[in-house]
Image: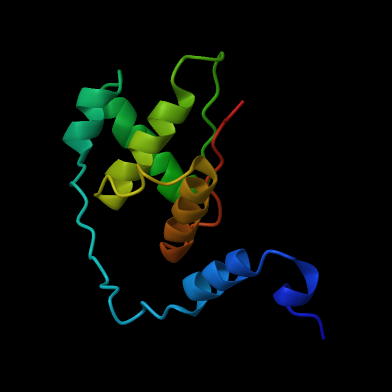
Length: 124
């Protein structure tokens, strides 16, 4: 079995790396509970150019049809609207710091927990 000392002539670098990886700091780490700002239907209506009737229709289509497709030309706000719709359904603006892929995965899991099969977002 080769070790790091067998493959590098820089012993001082090896020692520094060993110290970094052998250092057990797990006792010093605290779990920090994150609090997220709430996000309501009113917040959605303030952020997105949509009437309350259109919002309710979009929400009911999602609940009853278990599927929505947002379509439009590039740059009209499909992604922006989809994020805000998800925030309003969840009730928290909780995913703002995640990458978009993780956002979609988290939203999909939340919707599955509601018994809905799929949320399709037009993300062209």
